[in-house]
Length: 430
Image 1 (cartoon, one colour):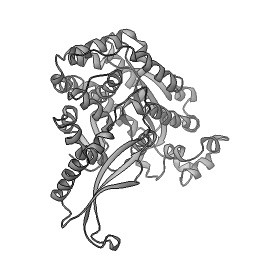
Image 2: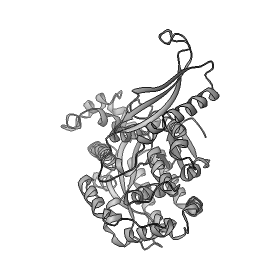
Image 3: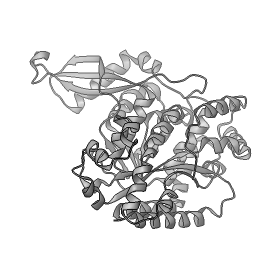
Image 4: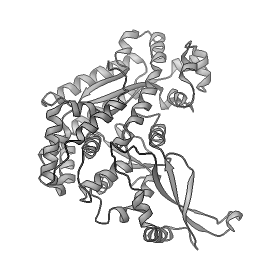
């Protein structure tokens, strides 16, 4: 696995919590639920349509520390993802305030020492690890998420007696912190995020917040001689048709054990889709004007519509588009980061371009005009479409019951509808 962050076109950052929930059911440790269906949809869409995958370094450490306690008989989905040649790790995740839950003096700071510490911690604190395991539940909001990490300290630190020590820390994050950290890590790139359903409200809040930069986009369009109305038609949110991916997977699956194999077979079938996305992102990055970007979006939509015509299902995803200065500009701050940290009302109340430029840490507004403007986008699974299109959810439930040889509580559908109605704060589609 490559330990350096390399953001390729059409990449997806995957949450360890989503992988946990999938392996819990597909690995045979628990039964599928309505919440699992939503999480399965999120992963299948990401796995089949994304070309490259990213996990955070801290979550990889968390997976290594907890896997033998939580998944003693193996992790089929994690193993499938790990075997991919298109996976990278990136540092940074949530807050860095860590409670030390294991410490031991050691002679060497090496991998063997680390592994011994992990084994000891697993045996000693297995109940602690199990108690912090999370499964999405629409009736029980998730207040915090525990993540374990490993490190060394003390060798050159007098406060530790200059003695080497191996440490295991426990970090606590709220769902909003998880979403913000994921999005901030990839803020300068077009990267999808595969997160569990318990973070969905936070995802929509963050994506909706970034769409506020539409006013700047309109101003840039005007400066570049592009019709503002034309630009606005390709900005904000919209529904994008996608094939009925989960239904395709389940229709070809006869048993739980076959799920990873079927996913890989279908992923191969969707190579054209992924190539389309990669070409689209490259064109956006290479564009020098907003007009070129709009033309790219039009071509992307045309190509995509042809590909999905052979599917009768009306599956959709929500596409968010927002402005940022392309990573090639070398500016330290982006408009997206600015919106995360300062009041949007103060920034946009008079759309003073010089004021915006100053607050964003840019040298001058006329410099921005010369730079490439990246029409960024992110997509999330349209859970409302899944529920509102009754034949789709009914078919998925029946297929999952067949594959997993179980019965799903259909009364939970009303609970899911209530949850989604509560968090439905998505901006109007264009």
